[in-house]
Length: 328
Image (cartoon, rainbow, N blue to C red; front, side, top):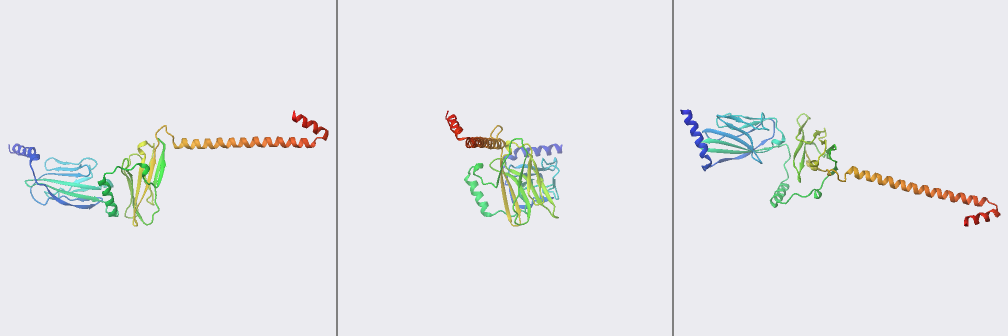
């Protein structure tokens, strides 16, 4: 009977909870370094009855992990078997994360539901602190551009370091290399607007001199070289593969970038191979015509020279007859 009343009270609270105006206590967030086994702290500063702990991640508030004292834990993909609740104390909602990648960088929000004092929240910023900070002036310019709400510029108006053309269903390797003035310790290959955007691969130098590669591409294969140059190998190029690719090199001398524009003409269009074939055919035809003209001129010249030699060899009496025959 007591158990039934307990569950009845619990569901009554859940039913009327949305209509209650509860003050949410929020603690100023902190920054955590992206590293293996990193801990995202979430320790409620007061005592009480813990109802639930939930973790979400910006920008779309996607669920990371949920803990309920009675129903247990729920950890969805892609955090399954990577996130673990520490539960060092009764009011501890901290989590640890393993097998981390650069996709784990971002802002996390922890919400602890307690009774009777209500919810308590905290924000955690996960950053790769090995990367040099961005120039504050560049950040201000980016913020101004976002405030203006300007549309992304067309591809023709964007400055690129290299341009590639690939026919549909062909194979292509996009290479990002740079004249390194300093020690390179990380390279990030990504697609940038306009068009699809996101990190494709990361090459990072780790302690001991080795390389760590992170491949997020579903349209190819990322490879890293000892010089930390990055290559994206595309098989069966498609129209959606076209766009801007950017490599960001983090060095002890600062950040350097290279941008590559990939053009994929539509099927049946005037492709690069067809253009080159037309060039070759036109050049070959012009060469044959020129050769034919030269041969005709040489033959005519030779015939004229022989007739002149024949005229000189004739007797004077026969030359007169030969001239009259030519006039006829």
